Length: 207
Image (cartoon, rainbow, N blue to C red; front, side, top):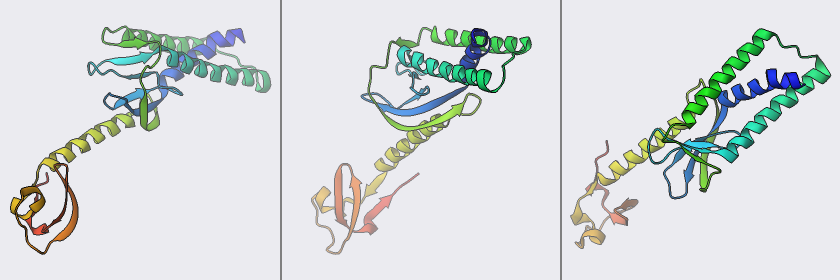
């Protein structure tokens, strides 16, 4: 089993750790909405001081890596002892170690960039908004969600400020006397609840 660990379990751990993960769309306390990644624990997140930076959390990373390693170790052990002897061809060993070495090298280069922040563990609380699973060659759904949410929020703000109301019809806001007949609505305008005004005097300019 020692040979299988070095020739099969360890490279499979590195390859699967890099290719299959879980994305997390979270809202940290006193920080902007953030994308994170890691399974079962998020161990890397977007940096906040520059757009290309990352925050890497070592404790969560080690736990995740050990869980991947334990999964492959138990799987190979069960197959080798109870189903059939596992025999590894030299070409397969060479291929797996080449891929895992390449992945390891790229990970070290990314982590060593000067903009990266490496912490022992995550030191901020967060609210998880949405999660999902992804393979490395598939487009990240969580990033689409983040971009869509930001776009919707920006559009809502723009439309909010483009709401214009004829001021002579709003006694509560303008101090004037409006028509006696009005219809009840529920618009929020500049922090005020406008309940009684003619709908004919409202002009919504939405783009």
